[in-house]
Amino acid sequence: MDNHKHLEIPKDFYSDSNDQPFKSCRVCECDLSDGKTPYSIEKAFKRVDEDKDITLFEIAICIQCAEKQSQKMSKESREYMMRVMEENRFMQKRMHLWESDWEESWKNHCLFSKEEVKLNDEYHIVGHFVGNKLINNLPPFVMGQSFIEEIQENLSAETKEEMDNFGQQFLGPDPSIEALLRDYQFVMI
Image (cartoon, rainbow, N blue to C red; front, top):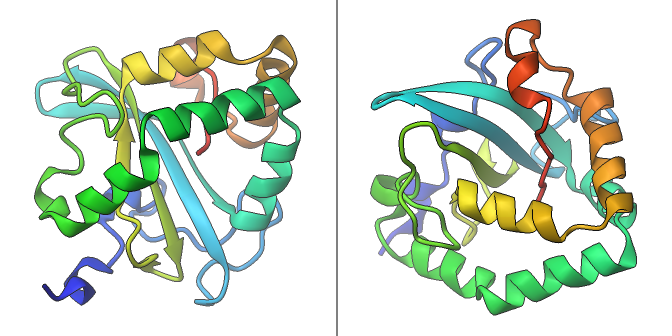
């Protein structure tokens, strides 16, 4: 199977502000379009109608800044996240998705719980890129509402506070959706 057709960045990961690929890291503002800097994009949505979602936030962050942010998590939270990834066979599931016809199905179900995204659910999409291309063998995936809630329930207070600070500094909600985000926690995988 020729995986090269899979490498174009899905339009789901374009910025809502200009319907174009992200150009810079939200934290350090380094150039993400140079084709050299690996980065991730996380977008959170709320399904408000059968075929309509509203974007709660979107962020493109270079791997260096993501790693720095990850190091700010408490030791307990980092250990918990590593355990969750291992127990859920995260990399195996992602590889299986890559080997399947992922372009048709990656947005339908949470990679972890397999639950379908339903009306009124919040869900996140995550992808890893270099330039305007997916990183080979790493298809985008969905984190569903129940999985996000499970993570939030098990993070330390210290980590939740750090994530709140990060969110306030770099996600800056649109005033029209600020109320929706009041209890929101950034996940970042």
